[in-house]
Length: 207
Image (cartoon, rainbow, N blue to C red; front, top):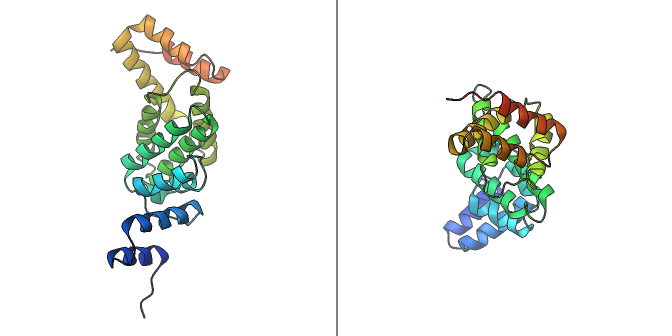
């Protein structure tokens, strides 16, 4: 006799009109919120579960940190960045945890040969979020530093993204104004991060 897993049973009930699609999504969201492992990523599903948790980085963030959530990296990254945007103003530590989860998930889902580039792209996306500011950057960097320790990664992807970010500032504003803008953005960060920003300015090569 054929057997059904929980998710397959829910899908079968929806397909047989024994359950409305929205009801199926809500049930899956509850499973996800209760640490049901490796539910395939769907922005609607993960969003419903995260919203039910008040966008706190709980079980859904754990799911994002697993490679199975990254079959569509662009969609998964967009979801994690949106989750961070929901909490950065009121619960910045939760935003930090969402970004950590995203970095970890992409790291684990990517072949070693592609990791540096993929993680640089994610770091660039984080640095260019409209909600990034001098007050939010310390929490962003704290999340990225913490996850690098967890996965034993280097800071090279973030460094590369910061170099790229500063280059874009120079192209837009000129070197003097760009330097002031970058250092102002890093004004509230740890001394090590300020030093990284200063080194980025000093080592910039005009194109």
